[in-house]
Length: 140
Image (cartoon, rainbow, N blue to C red; front, side, top):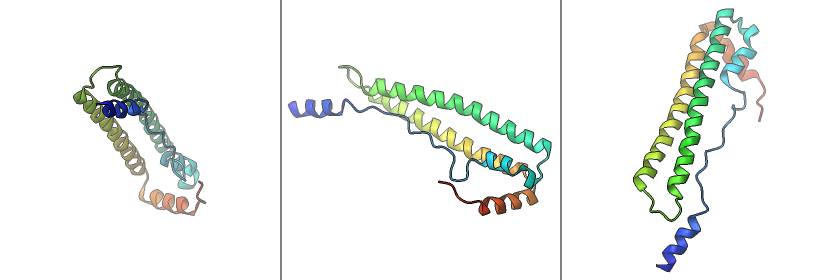
């Protein structure tokens, strides 16, 4: 019994944290790169406006989901580290499932954003963008 108490107390300092936010990859985010090459790609005013609207919508939704994620992590910590209370495993696992759902939403939003951005380009613009993007030096 004493060893069980020791094991539980040794685990007590551990807290669940949000994963660090990942910035854009080596070439920056897709919308940023499309806008950077807007003159080379000869984007229309309408295309530029739609790209900016996609970014604004994505950022708005990201803020909402990231806030929900932060709250879910706070909830998880309070559920998993109660002061001398029995841990309600069902609530802990439901909170973990909620965190997974929110992370999944973010991933889907990122994929949808990229697909929507590429749909705005004509076939010629898409091919030219790929060539320009491949020619740029990678930044790490």
